[in-house]
Each structure stands twice: as C-alpha cells, then as structure tokens.
Length: 560
Image (cartoon, rainbow, N blue to C red):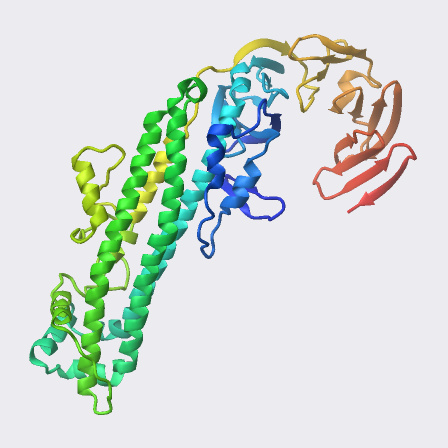
C-alpha cells in the first residue's frame, strides 16, 4: 500500500490475515512448488491446537490463517527490491534470504524450482544476472515448516494483545463508574481530602456537611449499589479473560515455541536456514515472564476487589443510616471493617492521575500502562507465583520476570523477541553464474525460462538465461528497432509497438509467421494476448478502460 503496509487478505472470507510495515520497495509474487509435503510427521501435532475462546473485534482469524498457509502444493514467495537488496519473504510474512543488488535493479525472479534467480539491472547498461540459488531450493520445505509455525505464533500474539486490550477496557469501566459517581465531588474539595472526609465519617460516625449532602442528595443508595455491582462485574471480567483467553493463548504459544526450539536444535535440517536455539529460548523466557505478570495482576485484582467491595458496602451502610427513607440493612464483618480502614489509608487514594482525569482506587491500572509498575502486589497466598520464585531461585531455565514491567510492556518485549527468533538467514548466499548483456527493449518470461531483447542488429533474440542457449532463431521485426517503443509477450507470439502518428500508435501482433498490423490511441498503456491466442486486451494508460479484442473474428467489445 501507499502507506508502506503490506496487507494480505483471505479471498473467500475477506478477513485480514497478516499485515506488516515494509520499506519503500518494489514487490512481486511467485509460486514455487514444494519438493515434499508441508508439515512432516514431527509437526503433525501442531494442527491439533484447540480453537481459542472468541473475543469481540478480534482482527486475526487463527483458523483461517492456518488453512491458508497449510498448502500441500506450493509456497508463495514475495520478492521485495529496494535499499540495495532483494529480500525473499515466505508467504509474505517471513523473510528468509536477502541478496545484495544495485540501486538500479528493477526485478528479481526465481525459476520454477527456485534453483536459479534472474536479476534485471539497468545500471550503465541493461543486464540480466543469473544466480545459483540451490541452497534456497534445498531448504524450501524447512522454510515452509517454520513459516507455518510463524503464522500461528503471529496470530496468537495478536490474539493475546487483543485480550490485554479487552482487560484494559474492563478496568476502564471500573474507573469510569467511580468517576461518574465521585469525581465531581472530589474536585469540589481541597485536593486529596476526599479520603479524610470518609475517614472522619468512619471514625466518628458523623459526616461533614459537604459529605452528608453529597451522600444523601446526590449519590444516594441506589447509585452506590449500582457502583458496587458494576465494579465487581468488571473485576470478574478481567479475571475471566486471564484464566480463559490469556491462559489458552499462552499454552498454545508455549507448545509452538517449544516445538520450534526442538527444530532449532536439529541443526542439519533447520539450523541451515538460520533458526537459532538461543533466540527461541529468549522468546520462551519472555513468554513465561508475561504469564507470571498476568498472575501478579490476578493477585492485585484479588486484593483490590475485596477492599473496594468492603469500602462500597460500608459507604452504602453509612448512606442508609443518614437517609430517613432507607429500609436497607447492610452488615459488615470485622474483617471487612479492617479492609475499609486499609482502603482509606492507602497512599494517594483518590489522587488525580497526571495522565488522565481519573483518580486511583487500586493498583490494577498500572498493569495496563506503558510505564513501569510503581506498586507491586504482595505475593502471599498465590501458590503459582510462590512456586515460580522457588523455581527461579533454583535456576530453572526459561523462567524470568522483571517486576517493574506492566503487562503491555511485557507483551512488547515478547513481540520484539519473536522478531529476533524468526530472523532467518540462509548460511549460503546465491552466487552469480553468468551475466547476459541485453538492450533496453526486453521481455523476461514470468518463469524466467526465456528472455527476449532486441540486439544490435535489430533482431529479436530469445535466450534461456539459465543455460545461455538460444531458445528459437532470431526473429526479424516489422519495423526498425529505433522506432520500437514497447515489446509485449513471452513466447513465440509477441506484440511490437511503434510511435505511429500524433494521435495513433502502430502495433504489430506477431503470431508465429503471421503479423497483424493495427492502430491504437496514444493513451493505450498495455497490450496483452491470452494463452489461447483467441483474445487480446488493450489497457488504457490510467487503467480505467479495457478493450477486449477477438483475434479470430477481428471484432472488439469495450468494457468500461
């Protein structure tokens, strides 16, 4: 796209499969048959990954990605040219090789079996450089195996990020409800005195005039009950997302990365393409840190939920005692009263946050920020975290966590580690076999089997670039070579364009020994012939008009 984004869509469903930022490059696609079926026996278990719990607004369909990339017949390779190199990208998502080129290289095309590459360069003089790429051809199945895993890992990582955003939305609901009910009153008081008003009411049983008026006439019992209910639902929503969706994606990712680690240690098969065990281990470590961070969040939610719930129950009871019309009876245990005191004495309670107009009511918010965590939760009563720190002390590999990181920071570290993990580079680079000097007027067949160009004698020459041998005898042209403006066609049939007059340009359709001459408007951008030789197509320069020509009956039909 013009914005530098490479996006791929499923043709049938139309859903986005993958998108990535790419440099300003010339891109082209080719399809290469695989020498052996994709997903050999040691990878069959990867197809049994269970379907993940659905999430609203999920941007990537894991199942569709899996189906699209598990072709048993071929592998699609995207070639991107620019910035002094040609990059080869499996299925459009995983770069596996690069080739140093000149800044004037306009095309790099692999042969059907990927054992050769043709690079067209216009530097000083038009040339066709032929490279041996046997190492690419020998590793196609291995590259396809890794690409299959990479597609699933990318989808799962995107799924995990969507879960984190859904969790953040649940927490935003908590804050928005508190803001709606308490923030205006909080701002009407002297900064940071709201908790003092509540503490005075808790200790003396008598509210200040401002607080009594707010509780009885503005907030009211009904609104406090709604606030209590919505707060508990939001906290429970976050817990459900962690225990269901986030953990499901973690176990699926863990399975894939551990399989990838085994492949990386199989050097003879996968090490040749640049798969590094160290990089895979780092991704597993980052993933485990992200999982432990989610357990920290569960601990923080557990602590916050009981304290906020106790505070709202006490506030409901206090408001009920101040109201003459109340009939509600609210009881609190001694433990809940202690929790209310802890809640009201917490540091920076109801302090307005600098980044938003919200104020703090818990420590959950910091896990959804891009900044470091300020207050770490106590880890007691969480057996998983206790076990984790025991494992770390015993130096169990692949377990690491940075206490100061938020969930989003941890996910970003994991995503960055995946880029290093799947940074492939073949151990052998393509080598130059031969260079063929051509003219500015040339045609390279899509499968690289033939290159046609007008030689110095004004004849159309056809060569096999891989052998350097002539495919067919030189052909004479219907017009002098200095009058030719364009060539079209890849085999025995071709089209020659010449300047003609001011309003028309002449074309010569050469089919075998027959030559058909015609004229077309000067705004014609391209002339092509179908494989059956039955139809021709004339495309306008702006691409808005196509003229279909019946080459047998010499009748045409315009399609707007």
